[in-house]
Structure formats: structure tokens, C-alpha cells
Image 1 (tube, rainbow over the protein chains, first blue to last red):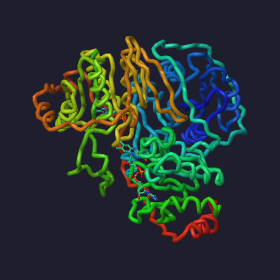
Image 2 (cartoon, rainbow over the protein chains, first blue to last red):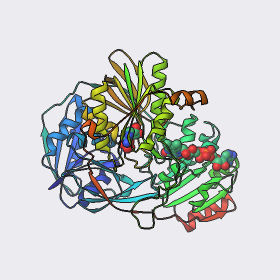
Image 3 (cartoon, each protein chain N blue to C red):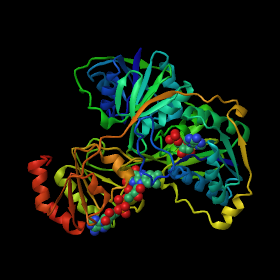
Image 4 (cartoon, rainbow over the protein chains, first blue to last red):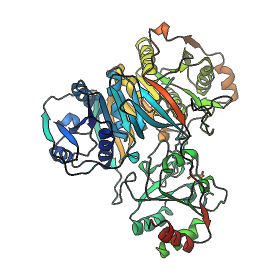
Length: 309
Length: 249
Ligand SMILES: Cc1cc2nc3c(=O)[nH]c(=O)nc-3n(C[C@H](O)[C@H](O)[C@H](O)COP(=O)(O)OP(=O)(O)OC[C@H]3O[C@@H](n4cnc5c(N)ncnc54)[C@H](O)[C@@H]3O)c2cc1C
Ligand SMILES: Nc1ncnc2c1ncn2[C@@H]1O[C@H](COP(=O)(O)O)[C@@H](O)[C@H]1O
């Protein structure tokens, strides 16, 4: 019995999500091997080999793997799967895209977004937008799992010395092709890994008002997040959406501004250590989960806050 | 080209669910049920494809209890042409649903399958990817835009770092994200018309699918409740609390 974890990276370096998923993998109690698949990503494998507790790193480099297309990566994972009882990936959009495809071809289910491991066969996962936590036992011979990375600490980036083994087989299903990518450009920390998150909602009113948040974020070294309503209104980019169907965050400090606190949004923030809400409506539901609430008009409160920090 | 859309009957997104006292499940008695919101977006997209002359027929399918006919009728009222219900009262997991849908694909041969990215009850986010695997098709998950050409569909996907565009060979399986479109409301005359549209009922056994459990739910518990904290009266007080009480800035 051993665990294979599919690493998340951008061909240059490992994503923070991978380190958290390694902690989950190690918690299963068996040997942990990693797969780094991509193009020109040998340095990523070297980085992965240094994570404490890892036994072996598989490196698969081919143009077909460059953008992580599920159609091409699935057969590669299936080649390796026979040696493993558990296949893991972080519950990022990449992991969510790939792992169910792998599971279906192994004729097993997938246990999505686990937040705790009770035994090698029992896992806890949130359902109904986090309004319930289900303990589930997997009955399948191979467990295919995605890991909610905010629920696990990052594994130490050094201290390991795993062997790197190159895989030479190339799978190109030829049915999907990468066209282009628009990466949201930002010098800010990643939303899911940031220590402080400033989030704006529909109450921000327009794109320009998000500039007020930017000024604050500069001071706090914070990431910027948003509600679905703010994204739908075009105030900010899609990938800033926090919530049940967006990103799940767990920063030390979350400050929500002009956000009502719908269950779908709260599902994504309630593991934050400290929640601050600024809203002009004293009955806004977000105050029910906020440690510190300020009933105020954001047009006055935000400039004041920027000055006070 | 035929387009197959899948719809799931789930708890209405406005309902705040409660865990049962015996921790066996959540309380689903007498709660409002509805079409999964992501499936509504998928249905809307299929109808737009028909209106644009890309789709020749829109077929909606659901796997679940008899009551799921309500959600299929809603999809028909929105503009789908016919419906298929694979009826079962057994507890369904994604792999079984995907296998059932694969059988429907085998007989209907759709050029595109449109699904939701996620059920808002189980929050699984996996059935579309599983179906694509089982029928050997390309997958476009979490899409916010799509353009169909002769042999391909180009999709824009909402991914963690931004947007990714892929070209997929048809037939393909697509899963809808929130920004793909805004679903229409069915109008009363259309709701009346939908009552006469064909709705075929089958069983998993008719399709040769065995309903299988991949997991067993051991218990369901409520999450740790967050307590409401305090209201501060000024920005200065807020900053003071964050610095000296919470010590987070
Ligand atoms: C299937 C589905 C999935 C969803 N997924 C998500 C998700 O992942 N994430 C998410 O966030 N939402 C999600 N939603 C949407 C969710 O239900 C809410 O509609 C959304 O979170 C509301 O966003 P909001 O709080 O910005 O807007 P609103 O609810 O409109 O709240 C705006 C708030 O701003 C306040 N305000 C206005 N002006 C000012 C001012 N000048 N100063 C101070 N306060 C002001 C108002 O008092 C109000 O409380 C989803 C919905 C569905 C159906
Ligand atoms: N029982 C079902 N019947 C029809 N479609 C389903 C069913 N379960 C899941 N789906 C489809 O798969 C999508 C993703 O669901 P899930 O993988 O459960 O999060 C849903 O939005 C539906 O379109």
C-alpha cells in the first residue's frame, strides 16, 4: 500500500497547494510518491524531491503534458495507478478536472475535497456548502481523493531527499488542444495562501471602488477576493470569487466589505481565524459570523482605515 | 447536432440545511427542492445553441426519484425538446450517474453534453469528468464561454489563476460555471406547452446499469458554529482590536 500524489505546478515551481496535499498524503500512513508531469519541469521535480517524507518523485516531461490537459494526463496516471492504494491531488481547479477522469477509468468513485483523515479508508468532507460535515468510508479498492488544502498545514519544503525517476511514455489523446491562457496578473499573494484577505462585494458599487481595497491591500500585504455578485458585476476577475463554488480560504484575517454574507460566500470564509465585516446594514447576515463588525458606509470607512494603518 | 443536458434535483439553494439529531444525514423532509443552479445554466446554454441553429434537438436527462420529473418539466418549459428520467429511489453516487448517462449517450449520440460543474448538495464536482472518461470524450470543465465550429468546440474555462481556452474535438462533455449565462425564467404558456412534451421513463436496469455504492456515509455532523463577535463603533476601535486583541495586524 502506498500513495501517489499528483503535484500542482506551473512548470517552474510547485504551488503551495501541493505542500498541503503532501501533509494529507503522509497522514494516510503509507509511503508517499509524487508525480510531476509537465514540460520543461525538471526543476519542479528537484523541488518536490526535497519535501520531507517523500519516497520517490516521478518526472514526466512532454509537450502533451505542458498545460495539464486531463485527456493526456489521465492515461499517464493510470500507468502508475496499479502500484497504489491511494491517488491524491489538491482540490484546485486542476485537481478537480483531472481526478474524476482517473477514478472513472479505474471504475471507482472519488472522495472530493476532504478536510480530515480519520483512517486510510475514512475521510471527512463538507457537503451542502459546508453546512454539514460527512464522515465517509470509501468501499473502493483504490481511493481517489482530492484534498482541501486550507485544511492541512504545508509540509516542510526541505529535509527530504527522494529519488527522481523519469517516465518516458508520452500519451497524447489528440482530442483536446490548449489555445491560450489569460493569467490574472498580480503581485499579491495567492488568495488561498494569503495571511490577510480583503474581500469586496456588490456594495463596493463599481470597479473604481475596488481601488480603495487595493490601497489597503498594499498596506497589509493582503490578497484581494470578492463575492459572486461583485464578479458578475464585472468589478473584479473571476478567479477572485470566494465561496462554495469559488475558492475556499482560511487566512488569519479576512475583512469583508459591502458583503451581505450569503451561505454560499460564508462557506468559503468560515475557517478564517478572524473575520471582520464592514457593512452599512446592521442586520447583514455576515455580522453573525464576524468577530468584529463595523456598521458603516464603506465610502467613509475605507479611506479612514487606510489612514489608520 | 443533438445536445444532451443533464439536470439534477437538489435542495433549493436558499434553504439552510440542518443536520438530523441522530447524525444520519441532513433533514430533507419538507424542504423546497429545485433544479441544481448549475444545471439551469447548462439548460439555458443548450437552448441558446438551438436558437442559434447549432443544436438540432435538446434532450434533458436526469437520474433520480420520480419527483425529478418536476425539474425535467422545468427544463422543457425553458425550451428543451424532450426528456428522459432514469428513475430510481436508491442513493446515487457520481460513478453510477456517469455510467447511466454514458448509456444514454450510447443510444442518443449527442454531439455535445452540457452539465453543471457541481451539485450544490453533495458538492462533488465530478460527474461530468467521469462521463467524459467513460465515453472517451474530451472535457471542458468550469466553462464561462463556448464557441462551436464544425468539428470542435472552443471553451473558456474559469481556472485558479485566470482563464484558460481549450479547443476540444466533438463530441465533448462541458460543465457550466456561473458566468456562462443567465438562465431565463419559463413563461406560463411555455409551462403549459411543456406538459405535452415527451418525457420517457426508464430504470437503471433497463439500461443495464447496476446502482453501486462506492462509499458509505458513517455520520453527518454540523460544522463548528462561529459565534458572532462584537460590534465596534469606529474605525479607530477596529484597528485597536485587530492590533491589540486579535493581534493579526
Ligand atoms: C449556485 C450558486 C453558487 C454561488 N456561489 C457563490 C460563491 O461561491 N461565492 C459567493 O460569494 N456567492 C455565491 N453565490 C451568490 C450568493 O448567493 C450571493 O448572491 C452573493 O454572495 C451576494 O454577494 P454580495 O454579498 O456581494 O451582494 P449582496 O447580497 O447584494 O450584498 C451587498 C451588501 O453590501 C452592503 N452595502 C451596500 N452599499 C454599501 C456601502 N456603501 N457601505 C457598506 N455596505 C454597503 C449591503 O448592505 C449588502 O449587505 C452563489 C449563488 C448560487 C445560486
Ligand atoms: N442524478 C443526476 N442526474 C442528472 N444529472 C446529474 C446527476 N448527478 C449529477 N448530475 C450532473 O452532474 C453535474 C455535477 O454534479 P456533481 O458531480 O454531483 O457535483 C450536475 O450539475 C448535473 O448536471
